[in-house]
Image 1: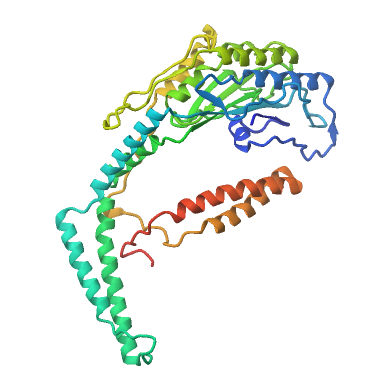
Image 2: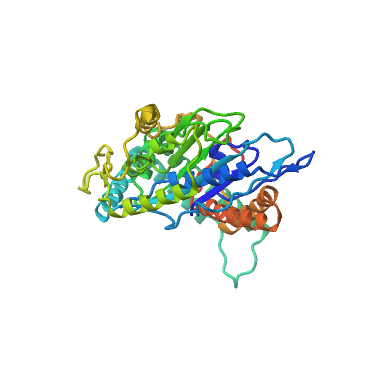
Length: 438
């Protein structure tokens, strides 16, 4: 769903605005009272909002917009200022979501690629023959220890104190041997972790679920956000940061961020951005709302008639192959205007960031320095959801105010908490090192 936001004063970067992902209007705690926005400020905010919405590209097949409808570029702007706030002290932003679904053949190839990588992980984590023999020997001793304990049926009388003591000793010895058996497996997995972690990371890159992207634009930011890592997205900036925002009520800077999985689909989406249009908005009166609306209508019509984007497969369609084909994306020249010469530096910066490897394998600890595993018990999905709802409600109430904020925060927090709880409960319990608390 497309969103727009107005912040007064503009103390948040675009990254923070997009992370909130909820339209909000803020009235600061003004000691000296408030002032009404001037007619010029209202007009500039309305025009700027419409211009940003018009700057979000229309999806060209096979890319899709997550919501078929844009925000209304003619929607009235809501502004609120403390008394004494300079003219033009506000920031505008707009965002929308996009989606790319893999073709059936590529989805099958990605699935096979992922399975091949996970098979390599499984092979590396398999115990070598000498360690497997050691594990089986300890397993036999463990079974014998448990079998040595006296047994009784429900009809039998309770154990005598001596029998109960024997049961306790047998169970303690069985648990000790069980921990020793699992320790062999745990230590081996730790020893191959520097090899399996990169393989697992590569396997995660071959998920075949639809890829989700977001495009966010900010205008008149006091400071620019940190560029996104290449694995997360692309950041383009036009103009310079403006601590005093825009006293002239004209755009002095625009920041664009495209977030989502690295690859040909994201490259194609970045290629649809009309950089010349965004750069052309700077340091001049904003276009009329009707002009922005007409631009949106033209973009929709052009996207509907444009040929599909050629988004190259990032894996070989021969499912039996495990080689990775370099990702490339070709964008139809009719789908996006060519960047102007003045924006070449920004384009080159974004391309260089996209060409950076997605991520380097994290530094690995040696097997001798393996950290203590986390406690075995993980919160259930329902517990995590209740905790997330409570925290989300408190944050939503504090930030947005009132029952509406608590309701929104509770819903978002509950969903995230449930997802985190489900992921945590799916992990297998690892044995703890001998020097870790039990």
